[in-house]
Image (cartoon, rainbow, N blue to C red):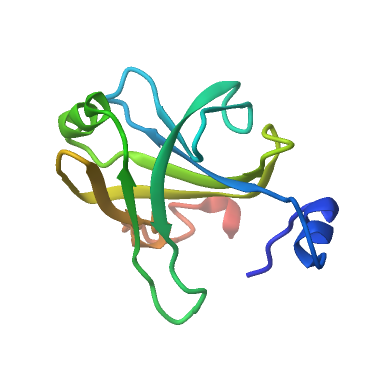
Length: 161
């Protein structure tokens, strides 16, 4: 699948030397949370308006293992957040329904512009300990949704006939 990035980022990526810093961002949302949780893979907090208004993304150490881009099979993606405070772990423990996780990349010099993403997942199989939270990230498969059992006939859909 083709991905579109800005011309300046493309030039930085293909340059022999570059000072480009790409930051990975995640947003964890759930109806059970008072407000979403915002994280950035960085050593300092970042203020960004890349998603849903301006927010402070908390610096943390996380790793998202993205699947390969093979179209023939569904790959599993996982995430591990470490170096987060105990309050976040307590919040994650209270969630009973799978939260939505959005991941995207920004440039450090233009934090309000999304360079790649967002990739939207559901967080399942959550495990946690004193230092980290881990889980599986699953795509929402719309083709798995139930399809109505209504038969398309001239009586049910007169405009089609």
